[in-house]
Image (cartoon, rainbow, N blue to C red; front, side, top):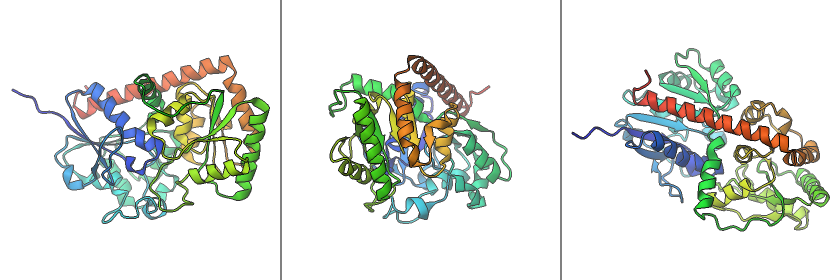
Length: 379
């Protein structure tokens, strides 16, 4: 007799086209397949999409009742900022809320329900209590940092489920980037000299852009390390000056520096993005997953953002490197020099590689636990 295949629905916001968000569903599906090779796994996003890595179906609560498990994996998705954050990215969303992909299905009775390595927005505490209370129906809940855990603990009046802390899924990006490179994927030529990656997408103030361009130009001149401006956020936003558009501020930096930097094209595929980050000396910018990709290779990385983003506090705080997340652009030159010096420190590199190995180990342990729980084998 044929045994019934386990049916798993993996939900995400991969249709936003942001580097990390694009990576999550593919990576998570692959990790599940390693442990549950006979499972039927389908991917769902708010808008059906096609990429070089996968196809997704449009989220519809009515389609999910027949699944054995539903898992929301990765991303800072636990919030209800539909109008404030997501309306710009989904101008033609139609009926329902974008946040339905995180909350709408929690009231289903049958499936095993899980959040895996999710981020929680700091304003979650002020949002609808019914959505927060619905999270008590989860069979498994893990967040990617202590601050996310504290936000949920402060927002949910009663939570019978255990809130676990696991590393961000980005800590295993390197394993897939290495495989793609071995397979010959990625067409963009890498710089022939040592280079660092810089990226920004929240700052459009001309004084800030001018200051950053000057600091980067002086760093490049003094060290010989090429500054590569890499657009990572590839959204479908209709606003040229959207906070989800990094090509605009990067092109302005290039103008202020009179073409001194290497500005990469917009809309590079994920294979090229991964290779460019892998071979960089270090990363500095707004993107959490630009930083985590380099950290996964044991390379230095820093972030600059003018608001105290919990996800960046978690990433750098958990590795005791709060100095690698700055909230004032005046500290940019000092951080550039510090990251460059760290990249040349062999002892620092050895310890960074060990830390990355440990984060990957913890992710593997937690994915194993999740798979045992959803198949009922966690005895």
